[in-house]
Length: 97
Image 1 (cartoon, helix red, strand yellow):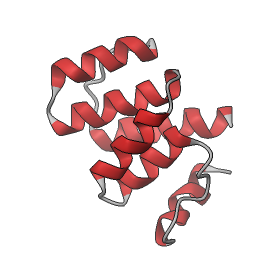
Image 2 (image 1 turned 120 degrees about the vertical axis):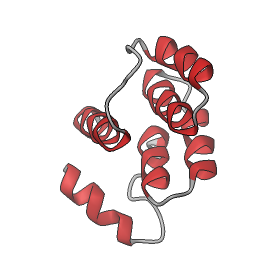
Image 3 (image 1 turned 90 degrees about the horizontal axis):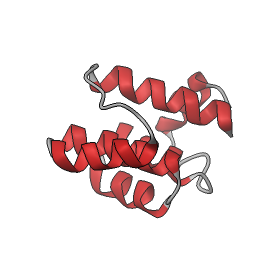
Image 4 (image 1 turned 180 degrees about the vertical axis):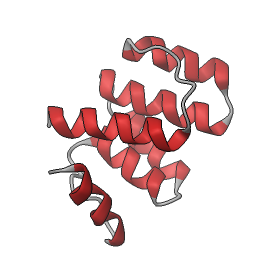
């Protein structure tokens, strides 16, 4: 799936890749549902889920929690806009899937 296809899937009622919990978290975030995004990311215990989890906590404004999750993901704390970080994570996860 390409980033464009992933973005186009936002018009649907359900995420296109429910088995990929980190991507599902990003999908719900783009739909404006932080709670469902967080629940999805939290279920992925690997680095991808941790990265999405970090992004979500940064977006929430919980910087210390975000730092914890960036460290778990092996990523540096991001300071770019949320839109740019979302796209960067989505591209990486789509490439890996």
